Image 1 (cartoon, rainbow, N blue to C red):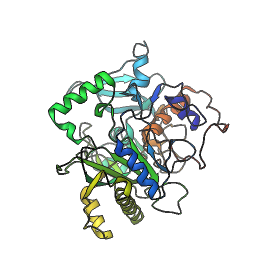
Image 2 (image 1 turned 30 degrees about the horizontal axis):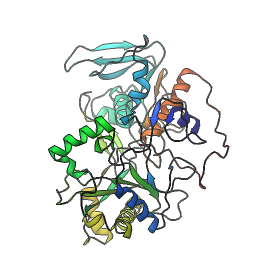
Image 3 (image 1 turned 90 degrees about the vertical axis):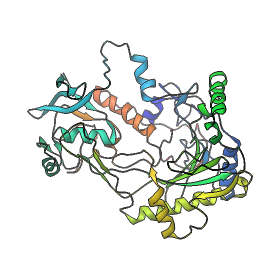
Image 4 (image 1 turned 30 degrees about the vertical axis):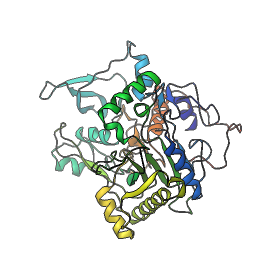
Length: 436
């Protein structure tokens, strides 16, 4: 898969065995870091966590800056990188604000999609000459399949959908990263909280327009790291994100001084959730059950990650910046107390995957070339096909799936495996691409 990561990438800093600089997707280092970020790096090193200049190189472990999918201080999304440059192509039509109600199946083959362009509007079928490709993500893709009658037959019948193809794995195997966080009050104006004030908001806008710097140019979570909850793990199983503010998480009280957030997430959960239909109405939202911590191992590792984050925030290097811990609160120490805190305060990392996973067994939804099992002319190409969640953010791996999926759909020969020239530095195998 590495050649596809490299083909996607237009890296502004690296061009080596792990990075490309000729692709469409802009990737760059943060351009507006704050001094507290450097103090965080020193705090990690005080705990024995090394500084890492490139999480996507040969080694993932350590603390450092995340590279961002940004170019010229602007977000380089999949739409900006891939779609905008070819917007005028005659063989491309983009329609927004359209609801796809079902995939149309005739004689075991997908022949198009049914759409409506407004609530209660007339249904229209768009026909496909060759294939229908679904790229609606780990929530949207299984929903569309199930409302088309493709999925676990018993569930479909229970909500009033006539089964077209019994495929029990659709909507199962959902995985996500659960985020726990430590929030501290700062000793002074060390983060971006005070930019919520009107005059500072205006100044931030001017900074961005004139200098391409400041909070508007920041992703707020551009600093982090990877370390171990399980010291016997072959590669890091905890990810940190340092948030340059306290009000980033919902429901956090306003502090007298600006605050700082350190999130931790266990990267390889064993728990599996589901996506199911609420009803036969395509306009209804699906029922999403991530089923976090159904496996007690996930709970144990997540709590260990939270303890690591607390310990980092208490290091000497951060003392000039951190006044006090606000959450979870110093009084909470036992595993049960932290579990209760996590149940009240944890949130998704927005990394859902796996609900149309690839494979060859009975619960697989697509084959390794992304074809839907049992239906011709239909593929799924998004995070839902991943059998397991990457030990990282999911943006870059998702774009990689799109890159390789394009070759599969077009029938092109796969890119040859990576050949390493030694054009890199570090000493451990790469775990996963981590670009935000």
